Length: 129
Image (cartoon, rainbow, N blue to C red; front, side, top):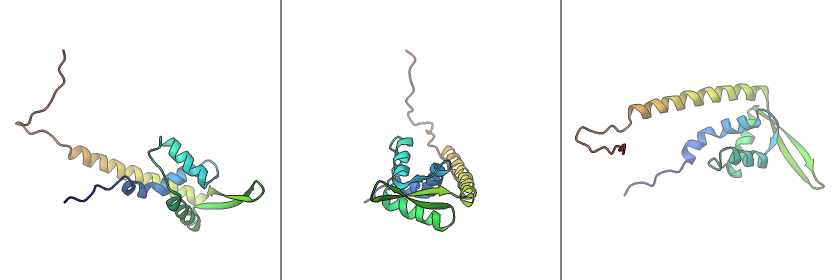
């Protein structure tokens, strides 16, 4: 029996840091705001669960790519706002270059390995009637 095809999380996992830094490059934001913007900007195709997002934000903060600041919201609530650091901008530039390089390479591999019909194989063509 064939293994079940993995869902899109396999590819998404490698882009989480990139996406979060992209969303934070112009202004500070809190976690829920990040997840909502991510879902909205991707037309619902890129969802990030809290169980993945917050550990990534903590790791980026620990590595010096983000700063965090708690702000009081209302009487009893606080929010943690994240802001990209100068090291974070350098890391974002690196991630964007790496992403562009890898996706370009994958595109080339897909072009070279695209299924081409054999001579005897039937290929449906559009009729011009």
